[in-house]
Image (cartoon, rainbow, N blue to C red):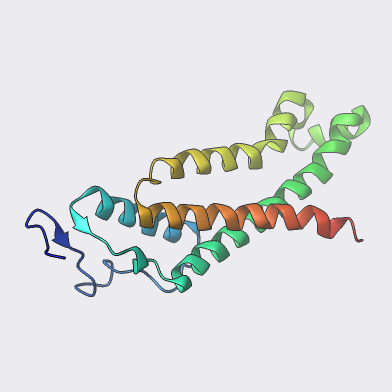
Length: 160
C-alpha cells in the first residue's frame, strides 16, 4: 500500500521515549506512556496496530492490578479503622483528643470514600486519552488490571 505524503511514519528507535517501555515502575509512568500514545495518535503518525506488544499490554495490566490491589487494601484498612469510630461515641472522643477532626462524621465519611474518589478521578482522567487504537488498548489493559484486583480482593477475604 503506497504511503500518503501527509502521514508520517512513527519514529521507532529514534530515542528512548518514542517507543514502548518494557517495564513501568508505577502508575504515573504507565499514564505517561498512555499520554505519549495519545499524542502520537492525535498527530499524523501512522502507528501499526501491533505497536503495543503483548508484553506492553501485560505491563499495563500488571501496573493496574498492583495499583488496584494497593487501593483495595487501603480501602479495607480505612474501613476497619473508621467504622468503629463512627459507631462509638466513646472511641470518637478518645481519638479526637489527639486528632480533632475525628469528631466530625462528615470528615470520617469523606476519608472513607477517598479510594472511591481517587478511582473516579483516575478513570475520568484516563478517558481523555482513550482516543486511538493503541491508547485505547493501553487504557483498557490498565483499567482491566485494576478491575481484576478489586474483584479478586474481596473474594480472597471470604475464604479466611
